[in-house]
Image (cartoon, rainbow, N blue to C red; front, side, top):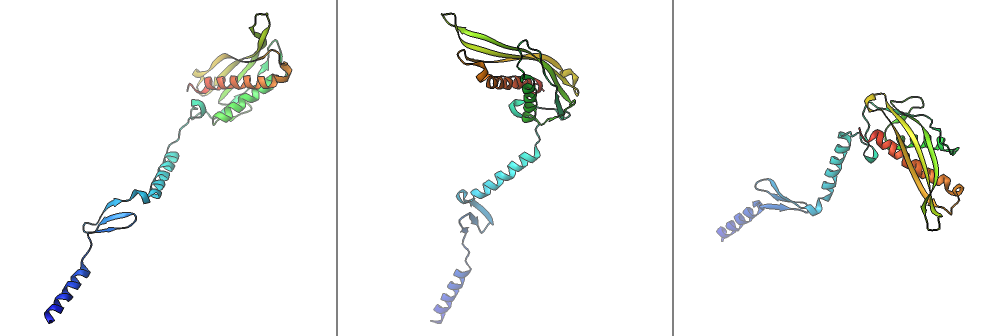
Length: 213
């Protein structure tokens, strides 16, 4: 009897010191004997991946400086400022507000789509020129010789100067238009038509000046 009790005591001690081969919780499966993580349960570690993604994103944003602006345009590092001279209206048909409207719209285009700062005198790059045409012309002549639509066209001549890189200077003419129903009164819709035309013109001028760099 004594031997049996001793044997039971030994068996109980051995059971208490026995180590399980693996430990598992809600996040890891661990090989105790070899002290290594066998598996990480993806379903419970999504926060880890979000954290890693956030760190990588911050690194990319802070570690990379790209001098690219909207619509594929880019500006060299040495060009900091731009200037837009007043565009005189030399068209045969005069719209009294067009010079101011176009000049200010050109400035807005530059500041909204690049990092350049407007210099009221002379910037690193400069835009100057004049409005050369403001034309109303009937379009889509019908069988009764009456026009169903009329086209408003605005043309400007632009001189672009880059004082940092004079080889990129140019002078060019730009035109844009809008059609409207001939039974509409031009005075009722002229401001809106001019706004749309000026938007087209400034976009084309901006792209020629900055997208080729």
